[in-house]
Length: 250
Image 1 (tube, rainbow, N blue to C red):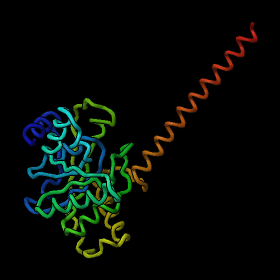
Image 2 (cartoon, one colour; image 1 turned 45 degrees about the vertical axis):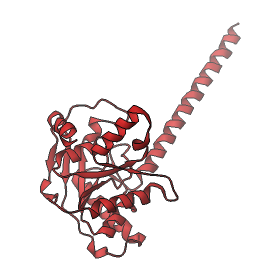
Image 3 (tube, one colour; image 1 turned 180 degrees about the horizontal axis):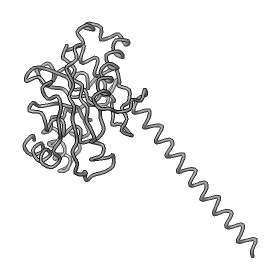
Image 4 (cartoon, helix red, strand yellow; image 1 turned 30 degrees about the vertical axis):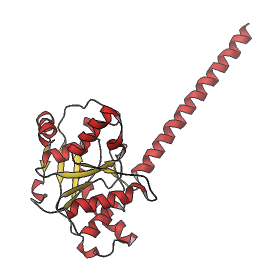
């Protein structure tokens, strides 16, 4: 997949990279990145010599039919792991287990602390569960990563990407051994996550929003729904007035 996808991506988009020396040549490490576009999971692995394993919802691997099999083969090829979101604690626990298994093999594990793509290009509060717990349970260093301008290449809902140069800034590895054995302390999880998000903010130059991206998406969806309802009500009122005016003329 690095040849079939990574090569053409680098030729077509010519991504620039800073801080490549911060990626260890061997051994486990966690790549904690901001998340601007669906294409983030392709550009980052494309520029690295080592394999990076991300997680993806299990539905990508279980869809029946020819298209489903091709989709499953594609995601496996680019280093995605299926995560079953069913069960009492859903994707969170599955993601943690998957991350630990990858790191125990001495590989690179990629994670988006925001939990979902940014709805507006800003950096949102990191979720304290997955990243912090995996880092403390394994002792692996956390490497902050900033994706630059990928949301301009492929905005949400757009299938055909725009040809332009994205950027990737890779920060220095962060050691959290001082928190070892404290993975069940929610204040420690919060502090570790915020520290990583601060480094990502410095690398990306994004405006930071102290709320979860999922909450922001809900607010945007509710605002859009309210706007549609208001527009519909205004159209109905206009139609009613026109009808009354027509009757008055008659």
